[in-house]
Structure formats: C-alpha cells, structure tokens
Image (tube, rainbow, N blue to C red):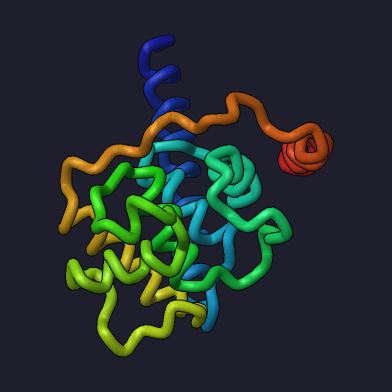
Length: 171
C-alpha cells in the first residue's frame, strides 16, 4: 500500500511539473516579442531543470553573456541570442568571431551556418513561436552541443531575495 501511495505521489508531482512547463511554453508561444527570461527558460528546460522563468534567468545570467544593463523583461535581440549560443555552447567560428567574441559576429556566424535567415535583422526581437523554432533548430544543427559551466558559481546577491520571495509565494 505504501509503495502504491508513493508511486501515486511521484506521478502527481511529475504531472504537475509537466503541466507547469506546458503552460509556460504556451505563454511563450503567444508572445509577439520574447524577453531574456523567456529565452533563459527555454535553455534551462532543455537542460532538464525544473525552475521558474526568473530562476532560469538568474541561472543564465551567471554566464555573463547578457548586457550589463539588461533586465529579465527586456526584449532579447537576435544578436544576443546568437552570442549566448555561440559563446556558451563553445561553437567554433571564423576569424572575426575568434578575435572579437562580439554579438554581431556571433549572429553573422550563425547566419552563415543557415541558422538564421538572411532577412533576419540582428537588432530585432523575435516572436515566441520563432524563438522555440530557433532553439529546436539549434539542437538539430548542433546535436552534440553542450552548455559549458557558468564562470560565476553563485547567483548575484541582489537576486537572492527575489528568488526567495518567489519561492515563498509558491508555497
């Protein structure tokens, strides 16, 4: 009887986590412009993390690939998506990418590898549907790409209270 109850409890927890992910993905799909938090959430869920969008953003911010002044709710431009993917998945690039490690050349490298369409503006934001398609395409084009460990091991101190208050709200 105890085993049956344990299995039922684990199953209900798993289904609630899946439902939460599906709900969040649906919200992202409906957006006209995705933000840093949405992008981070997709990266974190690909890693198998069960986190809130803010926790995902705090995790991805540890890679120090987002602009210093970027807020989690700011629209994320295509060149910053490219920069995060090129830098943190250690994708090889050409001479200019190797020398500068800049968002513009990250975008150019991915465009030249047929990841981005030629018509995509590097400074534009993309829709949720296009973001999900782009993340899926990334893992199809580079199936062995793995996210490196973040250089900063801890979350910034200003995020800790926000993370704790978010956890308290969900309890």
